[in-house]
Image (cartoon, rainbow over all chains, first blue to last red; front, side, top):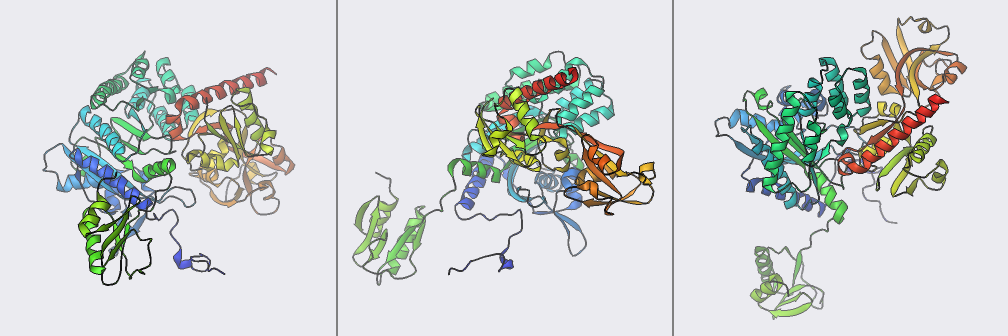
Length: 419
Length: 218
């Protein structure tokens, strides 16, 4: 009878913390490829890679993010009694570094990062507690060209990672609060409607608007808000009859932003979404989210956050975005299936030829071909090895053809162009 | 609207959900087609029948694009979905009820209170900030039996007609919320399949308004 290896009933020490996952060879490699592609794109746009710790003081994180997100952090105490957290996102860490160590650098500052973030989500809810985020921050520029650069760079990074067919929805954090204000809603009613929108409860939005006196143009906009999506033309539609400087200002900014994105040549797959419901206490200008038909969650998101750095004593405008590497990896798995474990070329050797085999393997690796040198002597009668060092030279099977010759000939045959 | 995956709740809302989809012209189905399979393809959409509490799970995770579910289920769910339309059927209320003749039933809230409920999240929100000490006891069903059995002083439970409460000699003390069926949607589906989702929402809204109008006229 076969032993049940790793049966958790008999070997509790082999358990894994819930909500965390292992990636096997293949899957782990593809995630690494994605991280490298994203960071490679960021660096090619001049964003300097920053390393920030996995742990931050609770006070630092609390200065940067809202109470709701703080409750989802893993918190612990170190030996000195200091309250620490495992980071749930990395923009706050970047802001801390900028405000404390890069404050004399010339602005604008372009920085990027990639690393794990943790979320103390309830167990059994199917969501990851650990995920890799890769993102960019463009600090110290107030103009829409900076927002356009972030959108274009997010699109370029996804493209480089092979995550195709994405949809980018661009909105503005000031639009809906501006509409509520210009509609003449009092502070209480504004708070109720924004709260309902943040909970994505449009039924409650409708009920709240029924109870209050709202001008028709604004009511029409607010009730139609999930449908306020489309190309450039929806901005004109939305602007009809809309009073108030704030919402008009948001629409005007989006009109300019659209032109700037067009100049980047990335409007394919970009939509404008006036109903984008995002964290209003964090974002202060244009925002965007990246979606794919193959994921129920956004693959990335970003926007302008002009007030964050001020909280760290460094008043500077900023915009940025984050890409969710694991969700992108999920999309690739859904499209292409599980990645194959990468194969390495096996180099065998017969009696007395181990040095030849090792030197051949080394040469192959130098040419970018993964090679495994056998640890044991091969039975001389074995004929199934793709490469074998024998006393009469190297024997190889490459592209279904057999060959025999020197190390140089073998390396050329095994790494040279196909056909 | 084609290509949507719609989750429907088994149980009390199921027939109403099927009726509404049919009258809205979304899917020509009746409840009986799900007797053979819990997944049915109809008019280019896929319909699945799951436990009510699982509808927000399927929708949040993107295993379904949309779902029909009672607001009372959403109260208890921490799932992040868009709540698009009040479908107006399946009305019920969440009420605090105590045995006839009990001090509580006369409006005396003093002392500490043991409350049995299937709705612990809603109960926590309801009692939050009230000057009353409450111990919640989570039950999985037949909550109305708890006071007579000596398990609890009161119940926080769903009632549609009040019949069950009366049959168990319980009187309503306060309302903690009112619920109807809702159309919910996955956040990404609302953006990537927006035409289909918005068309579905509009069709169901019209059908729900028409049904409500007919009810009012009858």
